[in-house]
View 1 (tube, rainbow, N blue to C red):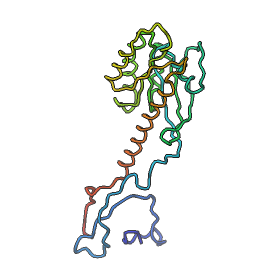
View 2: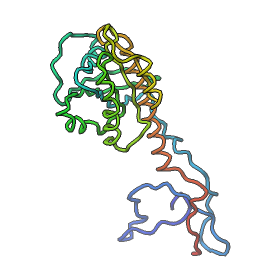
View 3: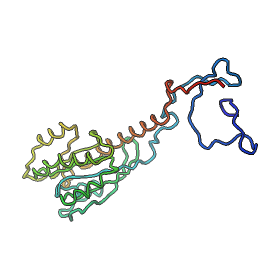
View 4: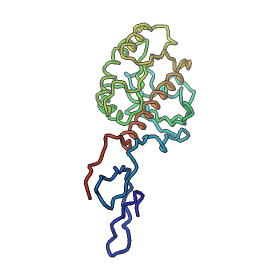
Length: 254
């Protein structure tokens, strides 16, 4: 006998009710008047997608963060300062991409950031763009002493948004103006701030050398990415198992 009270069809060979091959969330409608042998079912009810299936805040979440920008803006320096608290004057040019990880907690949720440092050479642009897929957050970096690196932000941002799947104009993203410790500045703070404000992207003036605002920038992006991740998680559950009164099954007499 099933939960609804309706008898189950016998299994082949007369071995009793057949075992269900999968479990389905379903809702039965009341029996129509005049139908015999059908047990009345409870009225339709709405089931919350998150009821009984909350996101476990104690479970570690893996997020992929990618750093992009022109050659020589200090992407590798920023990454090593954030992960290892170290700074070196000279780094080898990144060819393709390198990856470092960082474990932290955001809003009581443990995170494991997989941070991709990408090469900025134009000849590697097509290869670098293949690393965009699966990213949960993007960090755009430029050098405040190099006007061209700032002017290239539009191309880097557009290229990323065109290739990330699905395309989202509100994708988690921050902009870093690096090397504010140097005196020969070419990009005024007001100019960079206005560009970011127009596109609704948080902007940070940073120094990888002096460790100014580096952690704040990464953690802001991590919070954005986690918020988006949770939103997608909840939306998926809602779309998957939410039952509404409008989803009425067809009624037929027995």
